[in-house]
Image 1 (cartoon, rainbow, N blue to C red):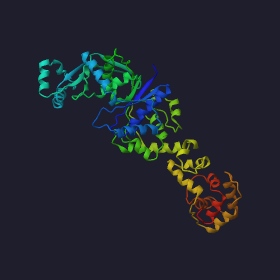
Image 2: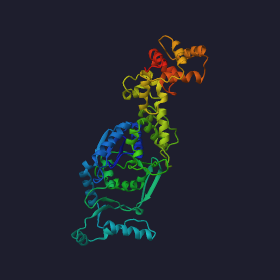
Image 3: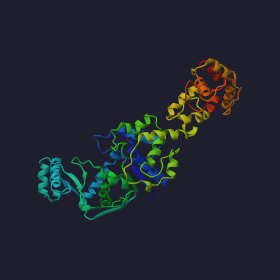
Image 4: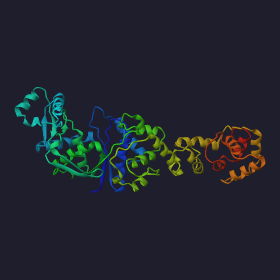
Length: 446
């Protein structure tokens, strides 16, 4: 069977960097092994799921470059969950429970106060048919729980290593609500099985869910359901201050990062190495990330997402990106030579536009000493110019005027660019050209 993973977001909010890390790790794991990537929209929460959030999720993934091979939408598969639930009922593994939320809350408090874990007591299994009918006549509608079997539930986790639970120490999970709607525990297993997902990589907050779902996979076996997939549970990343990430933290949403001008590959490079001992380096594309991807490099410690480190990485990435990779997003008139000249000085791609204006004009020059500027203009050599022109020209200016160091170079930079900082003038001067340079040294906007 071909290796296959899935990213299964709920469209109840914007994706944040924690969600993006799960999406990226799954994608890299699949691509490194020549496998397939499924995007599954878990939209059974009808109160909170919206089509707008579903579209935003797809937009975020496309921005990152995480193209998927297949799509599934849970709200379109309700018949599959109903069929699976019916099989579990027939097998005696799904049973009706009639407690209200208030009654369950009281049971939980009693168990905790007595020093016992808050495991459901299976009181519903003792109800007679007459008692059930009486409850239903009184307006109660059952929710349905999956009956876990006692004994060890064990698997070798792809991140955590050997993991084991005892079935008798877990609470029977609710699979169907009172209104008949299926819950995540059931829908996820049915989808993973029927859509032939071979590896489930998700957050460590799902470890206990996995123990339950392993038994659920086994209970549905023999009915066309695939084998139990391999599981890997990644540590959850925290904010710079150790706080948990949330879809409500707009500043750490992918949409927010994109709107701030960060490069998608900056986010990819950062998240692909976060939580590993490997250095976070700027790589040009996802293929380069996938080539060296190794799931075993992820540790169990909680990594912290540092926006400042992300900012530094964005600048480092832009400084090495080839023109071909950014050309479509640069303003008209930008060419490879100009990009090569200015990229060491940009931290956001949008900043490049200012340097296009400086090289193509008009620029209002800053002239501190008109006589010096005129003397420098008179010494401008004939074109063509290259990266040696600046050195030969300033040498002549130095000899004629006697200026050197900052007193020589800063007034020339202010006159030629209108700024006291920027890329090396040996690369900018040929792009500015003799006509503009002469005009600016004469104090004219050009």
